Length: 355
Image (cartoon, rainbow, N blue to C red; front, side, top):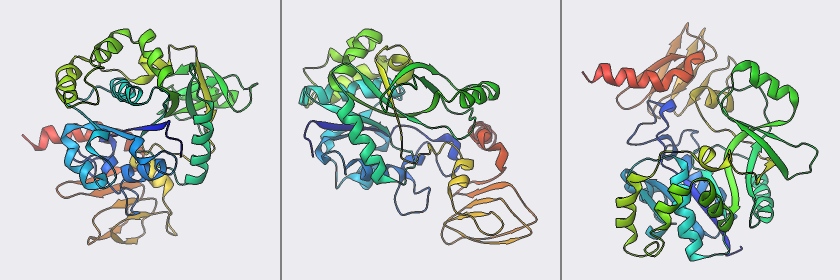
């Protein structure tokens, strides 16, 4: 493996759309949502350690998840490789801070940036695509991976490109989540990709980008360059992270830079953004029911998603097109076509049930 290759895994989200399995105290990246014996974070780390030296993989998460991280990856990561955010500030601050640490350690570093909660089965193709991305990232360009859209989704951002180019394509525009009519027009044009949120770039290129387009944030964190990777780093982060703007990497940098290139991903990908996305991924029985972990008996019932503990036996009669999720203290029963409302539903339920 190339010692100049690094990775940043972002693991600070709360996965509210997978409530009640995913909670603020134990969010979806730490859960075995797919029932394969590994959390999404563990699966992400496993993919990356086949490409990146283990000692070069950095993890950014909230300080409240320290014990969970150490339980799941403590045998693979040193404490120096884990960056604990005292507050959630979206993706731009965490990427900038980790990139500064990496560049200080290795000025020639090239970095893969990945969310911790995506589902990718074809790991060999993922490895090949990432290796092409690492080879394509230079001193100036910022590379993102685009997903070939399969339907006019309104829950993803879209990226338009110059399709006349070969595998490494010039990005023309980022578009945030569109309405259904615009999403269909994007699909019909053949020039748009879904935004995967997976990036590759050199430390030099991304820090130059932050310096130009997110100057205030860059100045805030770069002021601590002398203490990064030292025992004084923790105090600097605790003192300065709360001052950082809450902003995504797309808004801070990717939508502004003129040096963005896109590689169409050849690996399978799902951002696991909702219970419906999990239903679509999982194998189904003869009446299109999906059961995760539990045992279930269905009578005149179809197109349901059931998730419960391994010792739970569930009987469903005369019910179709529903999500049923049984956690330790909450039972969710929701029409499957309302899965995008689970996040707001969880907030309403907590406010009402905790009164």
